[in-house]
Image (tube, rainbow, N blue to C red):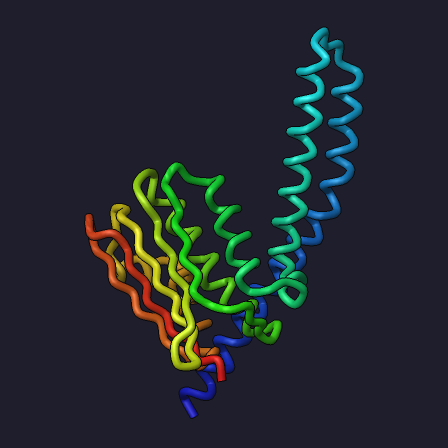
Length: 210
C-alpha cells in the first residue's frame, strides 16, 4: 500500500512538473514572435554602413529565434510522438553542446525505435536532467553518453570527468536527482548513481522495453 501511494505521488509530482513546463513553453513560444519582430524593426532603423554586418545580425537573430522555438517545443513535450528516439537524443546533445566547452561524446547502439509518448517523455527528461547537470558543472574535459539495447532493455550509461559531488547532500537539497530515480522507477527500471568529490559522475540506468 505504501509503495502504491509512493508511486501515485511520484507520478502526480512529475505530472505537475510537465504541466508547468508546458505552460512555460507556451509563454516562451508566444513571446518569441513579438520580440523577434521588434528587433528586426530596430535593426532596420539603425544606420549601419556595412551591409554585411546587418546581414549577420539578421542571421543571428533568425538562429536565436529558431533555438527558442525549439526549446519551447522540447519543454512542451509535443514533439515526442513525431520523431525517432535517436533523433531526439542527438538533438538534445547538440543543444547541450552549445552550453559547454566540454566535449560531449554520444554513442548510440540501437535501431530506430519509438516509445509510447509518456515513456519517451520520461526517458528524454532523464537524459536531459543528467546532461543539464553535466554541462553546468563540467567546464572542460569530456562528457560521455552511451545508449544501447540489450535483451529488451534500454541501457543509459553516462560519465563525466567533472568535479563530482556528495550524493546524499545533493539529493536532499534538490529535486533534479530525485526525479531521475523516480522516472526510472515509473518505467519499471532502475537508476544507479556513483559520484564523489574529484571523482566525476557516473550514471547507469536500465529501462525495460516490454
